[in-house]
Structure formats: structure tokens, C-alpha cells
Image 1 (cartoon, rainbow, N blue to C red):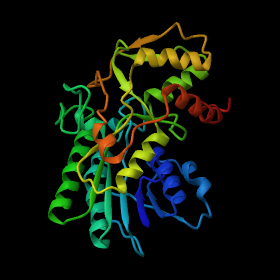
Image 2 (cartoon, rainbow, N blue to C red; image 1 turned 60 degrees about the vertical axis):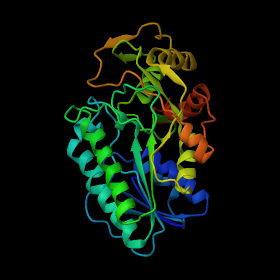
Image 3 (tube, one colour; image 1 turned 180 degrees about the horizontal axis):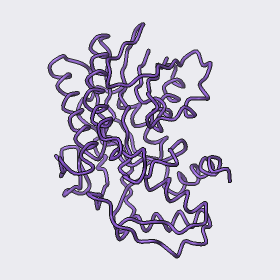
Length: 318
């Protein structure tokens, strides 16, 4: 297939690009590098199955030639206001990527009669009152809080995708992505995995926001990409959770990082103020993915972190 992938220079976009090319597809990557990293695509220079367009998805998208599939992954994604790349510091860009970017990407799919996949997020569930979160759960989202620019952008994007499916009969798919980690994460995006790994590799105590009892479920990037690829080839149109249901508290995660890195400062954990609207629990119900896609994660957290550490050591020149 000829595939247009927005956000191709991002963490997930670059891994998905690799997978698509490995499956024999031609990929046109699109990114404006606000949060994407050129280095993530450097290994594809000269590859005849990859081309790149520098472009902001919030503007009209024109792609010459034919397109069989549009994958919309372009958006800031970090909730940490301490990071310049966090969506609280890019609020307008985040809303435009979710609203105008989704509209423009769907317009390409409609113009070419192409299939469409939206990269949505577990953040549409907000601070959930249901646990674990099923796709049928409607969420507990603050529409005006600091995280709302991302949450509501993705909720609107899902609504727009389903409107194009129902009204224009576009073959659409929606993946709700839960916390994912692995090589090519930006070291400065402010999320817990890069924060902890960098602090531990520098021999510093790990900073925990709140009491550390809030939980997350972390999915290794290869597992996530496998789930996304299966979804894009499926005939299923409702949202599908893709993530690892194995739940771990932030304190337990900190202990594991310190163990794997040999961080001698591991017994001294700074307690910082909990970030506003930070969900206390986040865990996917992946029954739908198991049933429809025959998918579930294979890589456990320890294995995934060990596979991720060399990338961080290289980037930190350790």
C-alpha cells in the first residue's frame, strides 16, 4: 500500500514507519518537528520505500500520487507542564492537531478513497471512575483543566472520525493508546519513563509526583506497534484499547528502575506535588483487542526496560 503517516518523526510514528516498510508498504511521512525528532528517521535516508514532507497537519494537506491508507499520529503527547514539549505548553498546537489535523487527514482519506486510522489515547477516559477501562466507558474528563487541550482534542478527533465513517462511508479505525515506552522516546518530554531512567543513570534520587501510589500500565513499543498493525488491517471500526494491562504503582516502577540501573540513590525518593488532574489509576481492558485482533502484549516490563536502557545510555553519552 501507499501510506500517509502524520507524525512520522515521533516516537510511535517512527517505529510504525519501520514496521510498515518491513511489511512491504511505501510510506510518506509527514511532520513539522514541533515534538518529532529528525534523528528518528535518519536511518531511512535513501530508502526507496520512504519519502518525507515537512508540513503542519493543521494546514491543508496535499499529497501527489495515490494514497491507500492515512494514519494520523501527529500531536504533542506529554502531560508534563515542566517540559517545553508538554501539551500544557503547546495548548493551541495540540488542539489544532486534534481538530484541524484530524479533519485535514480525513480529507485526504476521502479524496483518495483511502482507509484511515486515528491514534487516540487512554487520556480520553480522564481520571477514570471505572477500572480497568473498557472502550464503552465514557470517561471522567475535565473540559477546562490543564490536561483538557489534549483530552478534548482526542475526544473530538474520535467523534470526527466516526462522523466521516458514518456520513462519508470512510473505512476508519481508532486505537486508544495507553502508556508506551521504548527506544526513541524523547529524553526531554517530561514523562515518567524518560525522567526515571535519566535520573537513575545519573545516580540521582527519583522524583515522584504525589504519594507514588498512582498506577500505570506500561506497554513496550514493539507490542503496541503489533496491535496497531493488526487493527489497521481489520474490519473493526469502533475504538480499541491497545496497552499492557499489567498495573504497577509509580513507587514500584521507581524501585525497578533503580534495581536495573544499580542506582545507589534509590532509597532517597523526592516527594513532589502531584500534577493537576493526574489520573490515580490507568489500566486498559484489552478484551476487545484479544477477541477481535488476537493480540495481547508479549514483552514484560523488566525485559522492555532492559531493551530501552541502551538507547538512553547512548543519548546521554554514558
